[in-house]
Image (tube, rainbow, N blue to C red):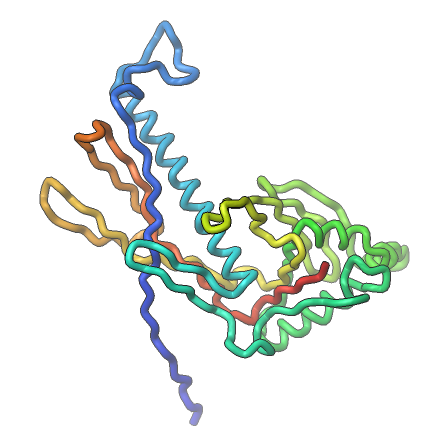
Length: 283
């Protein structure tokens, strides 16, 4: 008889992310940028067009917040949950340092050293992740300084300059905004990601992918979780609980006069199998 594995349930209320924009009468009476001056739109047409633009802009804001949260979870193993009535830190990595999917190289092992061999490191890390999690890492995401050290590393150049074997190739390609594909070596796709995010605490912009780190992982292991969002119906004097990744909301204010539109979400990234990836400080 096979013994069943037990489990533990913990409840967490994700913070509400709800950026909003206001449309006033002035916005509706004035001609929009690019609007034909001889065939002006009605205020109602401008209102509908402005609503669509606002929803797209607000959705982008929520996406950026989710991206920042994912970066925190993947590269530090935790995310700070701060919101109305909520202020705590959620930890995803094991408490024991030896079990955490994180390591730091030192001395000649640093990829900036002429004696280093990044491919030996990646090969060993790939085996480690495969053995501990059962998932094979196929993607590596590198910070800016890691990219520079990796491309310039002499061991990488010698490894690829083998005319008898097709071991891989460095072939940089720009993909979506901020993403650069650098090549495939031994079944691992190497990417760089150059995007900045504003840190509310430090008041500075920071790279989403730390400049001195690389993440090696199996794709498709994580997912975004979402809490329910409460919508207030002033006409009915009632509340509605909505379960959805994005919940648009709109209401009219008397002071200041205008129509507010908000995009609400309660996201929390879940890395899934914590040891299905590994983070290393290599420069």
